[in-house]
Image (tube, rainbow, N blue to C red; front, side, top):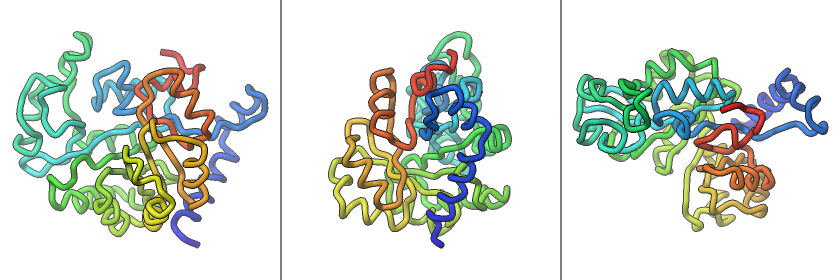
Length: 277
């Protein structure tokens, strides 16, 4: 039995016997909700992205996963931030790779979103794992890993040290736009699901998808690439499909209609209107 079959079997059993799933089925028309609600950079529509405030908000809104981006500091520490520079989301300037952890941690990563978030810090990977693993799923994107030689090994070591390299019912997923990096992660951590990210139509051909399926469990394209034929093709190759980034109710509804497996959104309440803001 291969990696995807093992993980799929475990997830199927988890979904089948989950009280939350059963409760939802009872409240609806009997159809079980199968889509994962993935809070993009945390609930980034409501709190500063990739901060503990955004991740806490995602939990409050009952998302299934928090999506986040990982990079590495000048002194080799793993940190959670999207851009390769700190200019947009902090009161500092410069590239992540050129700043030490202490320099990064001295920055205000929240005030740009609102005065109530003043003082929010750039989290470390350690902090995120300590606080959130086991409470919510984690979709971890390796951001520009080509800038950080050896970052795959650093992430793998961190997860192995915490025994998180074992099957986790798909509650830890790794993804990137860098396909070679994901091939490496699949070798380093064969029990953790791998996702490939793309916005290119060239990556949606049957041949390209077949190549991805050799090492990836998830194909995660941008919203504009989604159609019924693509979803069916991805599923036929044994992969799941998650799409990004939802910022409107209409786009969430469209993806639900397309029967994707996960919706990556700044607004978790758009995926499930029962979730309160």
